[in-house]
Amino acid sequence: VQLQASGGGLVQAGGSLRLSCKVTGVISSVFNPATVAWYRQQPGKQRTVVASITRLSATTNYADSVNGRFTISRDNANKRIYLQMNSLQPDDTATYYCNNYPESSWHWGQGTQVTVSS
Image (cartoon, rainbow, N blue to C red; front, top):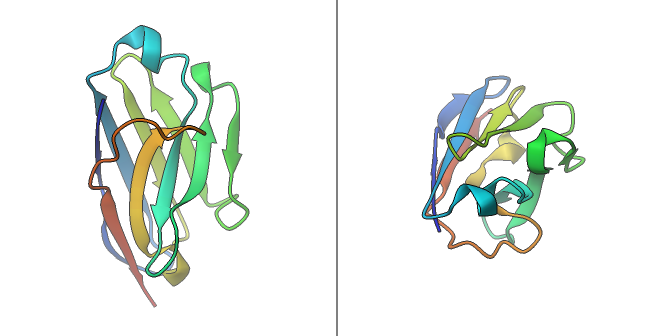
């Protein structure tokens, strides 16, 4: 399974970005039932989960630090995962990755860098 995250960039505090993750090398019968998530790794810290979404988008969960500002969604037909990030803060600066959850067993891609300036 290959994970290609994109959409990051440099943004001022208060701004928005929409991240996209393209999942390839997996058949629909594997992707569709999987719970998937966005993770981030901030400088000097371990990778942590930011948001997760279950199959059929039935349930979403968010880290306290992003709840109310970020929205995760998925497109099963095209095997894509999205993260809409609003009201970005400097503490959101990190490299963002997608993967299944909680196993994170798919091969980590390079992620996409998000930098928020104050």
